[in-house]
Every structure is written in C-alpha cells, then in structure tokens.
Image (cartoon, rainbow, N blue to C red):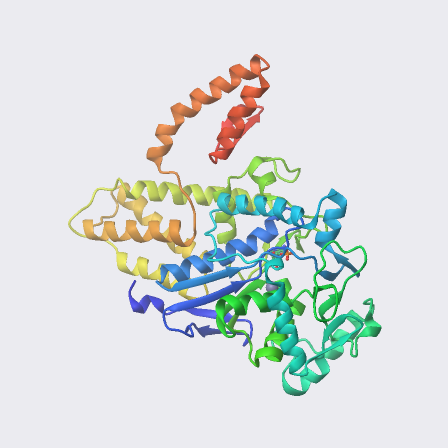
Length: 488
Ligand code: AMP
Ligand code: ZN
C-alpha cells in the first residue's frame, strides 16, 4: 500500500468536523467499539452498527495499519432507564426464560457469533466481557473517588457531575446542556441519593432479587452502565487511544459519561477520534427491541417475515448496508432490498466478466484514475456508497470492453481486477461465488434437492430436515415456494 493512499479523513464527533487521521503511534491503531448487550438475539439494526465498524476496521487494515480492535460484550446486567422505567435487561430476560444471567448471555452470544460469520464480519482482536473485568471497574471507581469526582452513599457510588464541571466540560461530545437534562432525568428512582440530578451511578447497591451481585469496597452490588467500557478500553488500549465508536444512540449518555469517567480518573479524554454509526430505521423510526419494529437477521435470510415477500441472502443485505454512508440513517424497505439485490448481481457479473476479458495493446480509458477513485471514496470518511458508484463505473467499462467498444491492456486489466476484487472482497467484505463455483455447484444442488424431494414424498422428515440443516450450515438456504424449491 502506497503511503499516498493513506490520506484518510474521518469525521470526528468530538469536533463535529472531518479531520485527517493521524494515529497516536504511527502505524498502530487502537479502536474500541461498544458491543452488544446479549439479553436477546441481535436484530438487523444492531448488525448495521457492527457491519459499519467492520467496514472501518477492514479499510484501516487495507491501508496497512496494525489495528487492535476491541469490542466488548455486555454480560453484566445494568440498570438503565429505558422507556421511562428502570430495568436490568439481562436479569429480566433471565427471569422470563427461567435461566441464569450468564446462561442467557451465552445463549445469545452463540447466535451473535454465528451472525458475524454469516455477515462476514472479521473477528475483533479481543471481545472482553464486563463480568471478567469487575476488579478493573472497581479500581477506576476508586480512582474517581480519590480524585474527588465521586461520592459513596448508602452502598452505591455516584459520579459528582457538579464537581466535574468545575474542571472539565460535561457535554463536550454530545453538546448537551445540563439544564436540558434536568427535565429528562427528574423521574429516576433513587434520585434522592444523588446530590445533583445529572450525577450517574458508578456502582449500584444490590437489590435482593438481583441475579448478579459482586463484592466491592462499598458493599455488595453491581457496576453502573458506563464504567465497563472505561475499564476494558483502557485496559487493552491504554488511557488514550485512537478511535472510540458505537451507535449514534450511545453518544449520550453512554459516551459522554465514559469521557467524564476517563477524565475523572486519568485526566484525559480516552479517544482522539469518536465515531458514531447511524441507525437502521423502519418507516423512519429507529429499529428497536422496545418499539417492537425489529427484524432478526435470520428471518430476512430465510424469508420468514411478513414484511418481505422473499428471502434475501446475507451478502445482499451487507451490500444494502454498504450502499448507505455509515453516518446516514437507512430505511429498511422491500424496494431498497430489491434494488440492492439487482445492484449486487450487476457487480457480481462485472467481477466474473473481468476474468474472461481479452486484452489489447492499449487501454482506451484511464484505469489508474478509476482505481484512485476507489481510494478517494474510502479516504473521504469511509464513503462506501461512493466507492460502490465508482465500482459500477468500472463495471460499465468492463461491459464496453466485452462488447468490443473499448479496450484494455494486460497490465491495466490485472490492476483493475486486483483492485476491484480487493475492494469488493476485503474492504466491503462481500462474498461472491465465482461463476466457476456456481456452475460446479449447480448439478450437485440439483441432485441434493432431488434426494430431499424424494424424502419429503416418502414423509421421511428426518432425512429432509437433515439435508436442509446441513445445507444451511454450509451457508446455502433452501426455500420452498409456489414455483418449486430454490436455493441461494
Ligand atoms: P445494545 O445491544 O442495545 O447495547 O446495542 C448494541 C449496538 O447496536 C449499539 O452500538 C447500538 O447503538 C446499536 N443499535 C441499536 N439499535 C440500532 C439501530 N436501529 N440501528 C443501528 N444500530 C443500532
Ligand atoms: Zn460502551
């Protein structure tokens, strides 16, 4: 990778501007992204955020950086104020499903790991868990208390926002003003324990029915919502690292409070660049478990939702996500998914065609500038939709060459093929079956589906299910419809 292609600009939520990306330690990048709370199966909205940070991770790797990518797993129940009342989401799921908290987390982590494979996400360097870092969280709380930015009351510990505001800027990231916060937080329970309405819990005294309880210098309890990310990011990346990311909805209070905790304990904002990925919406509203407007990734792949008439393979869904910039909202609609499916197949055809192109002595167009346009798009704050538009320009040229209306020489063809494949496979993370594989797989699939049909006719459901599950495990989805059985 040439150094000139490293002219990366990224939007820093902290400054509200695009800035040149200059890592703190030359070639090494530390990136922390807030991971899922595993009390239920991640929905398409959650996946969008993780897919967007996967794109960012992949492009940093593509530019040749050594990236240490830390994404946590929230497996400790936190009391959060959702929909106007306090609840511990993991504890609630455990009660409903009659399991222990860590059983719930383990169950949904298995699903989450499977989804990452299906959607072709690269595994982070480390996925630390909150429950594995209770001691580190306690130590940071002690540091905050020693520095005078917290107070213990009745077995709980709170962050002293008023004291903090004398020395630091609370609201530096979100731009929130404390007087605007007053109305929103007035109804919180245990409000009377706090000295000031904007104070937040670092440690909460245990309730008798809490499933997860830890010992601490302040008595039995559990950590506040924000402290785990401060503990795990600084443990693995240091007190000041390059990139901190998460969904836009985490900017406040979660990330604002992480900054307050880091400044209050170590005296500095933990990250140089703060990045926020925007929401996946349904009819203009954020997809969310609590609104009930969510879709599970598997439902879409298997075509079992009421919203869509058919199934969409994982690579089409990933392509659909890549067609929107990570800072824009994206609406989940059938029309958009159908358009993505068409676009993806046009790109696939182009990539399959380039392998077979005849070369000429000269190229009739400037291949180098097309390749540069791929880098320019991604260097402009990871602009995947522009990259895709530029890839389509390349496909147009490929079709012209194939029709005899343009020419390409051997060196240019090799360059274009290598760069296109690299951007599509490695950067966008799209898996494309080559036409070669498809043609070999087709007769095999016909045979397998024929055997499955025979089993179904004989009402041998064990065999037919075995075939279906085996194919699913290999990433092949079988769908029975009016027009017969199809696979993708
Ligand atoms: P949670 O499990 O609720 O902590 O969410 C995990 C991640 O998914 C966070 O980074 C959220 O910002 C993100 N997220 C939640 N809902 C959506 C959505 N509709 N679109 C995009 N990201 C989301
Ligand atoms: Zn976090």
